[in-house]
Image (cartoon, rainbow, N blue to C red; front, side, top):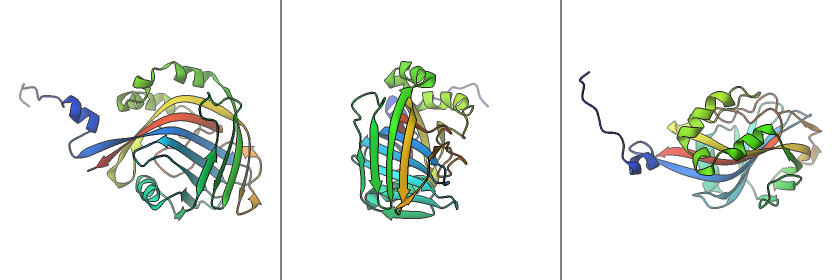
Length: 227
């Protein structure tokens, strides 16, 4: 190697990722829940995204089937190209929640085709307080998400904040807040899924799972795609 120094990427290149790639930001909430019948549910509620506002649900059934419930073909195609599913269904997805407050003590409800879900958001714990202390502009940067990936792996459940997604995509999770879920009920095709339990075994939609303890996270997700 010579002693010459190659110029670094421009500000515009860094904002767009590597040459030939583009970074898309999805701003919203992710809820991860387990139920005693063996079903695990991950609800995404995304008011601000390049695809417009939407909500989607990822379900892993007791037999291991991974199911995506998406509100449109456009959303389904993007999510299915980023994560791994055995079945994709396009169904109406409706979420009712007061997302203008801090989430504490709020009742959330969601319906998505065969799934009906209700849960109550509890108090913010110590980790949530730490996450809230990080300035938003820093917490959502991919470089910061890469830095927090190591500590995130220490949490039970296979949590990751960066990794390789489907189709050669890369992804970063900028977590800005976290609340425990205090209680929940759910039914799938009219059958009660049981009581709220930890998310075990970890879900297998992507490179990482949600935390083992059921919770609601305030998240900005960055997905880098090929142009």
